[in-house]
Amino acid sequence: MLTKSKAFSSFSVNDLQMAKAFYQKILELNVVDNPMDLIEIHTEGGNKILVYPKPDHAPATFTVLNFPVKNIEQIVDELIHKGVSFEQYGGQIQTDEKGISRGNGGPTIAWFKDPAGNIFSLIEE
Image 1 (cartoon, rainbow, N blue to C red):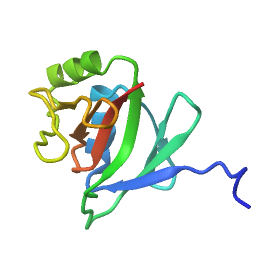
Image 2: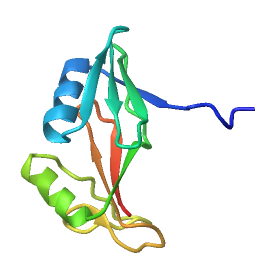
Image 3: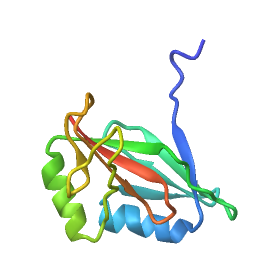
């Protein structure tokens, strides 16, 4: 029934302009204003992610957006240089001093938050 639907994702932020600046300047994403008072993140694969303002925004406790990358070490270093802090985990999922989880029965992955507290990840391809 929905096999051919061009599904897309969306999530909220508490400050749309701050989020837009972070996505454009820090993450270097292609961000476009939408006339419905939201922004669209356009990705390489032609997909778009809608980001909308929500005054009572509460960040999700799970990853809302994943970015596959070829060299996670390089991207993490570049983002740290731009002031991004990576999450540190020490339970079932272990991260190193940079915030990269290696092995642990899953992919090489690092998590960080946008200015609204939404959790994003880098996953090495």
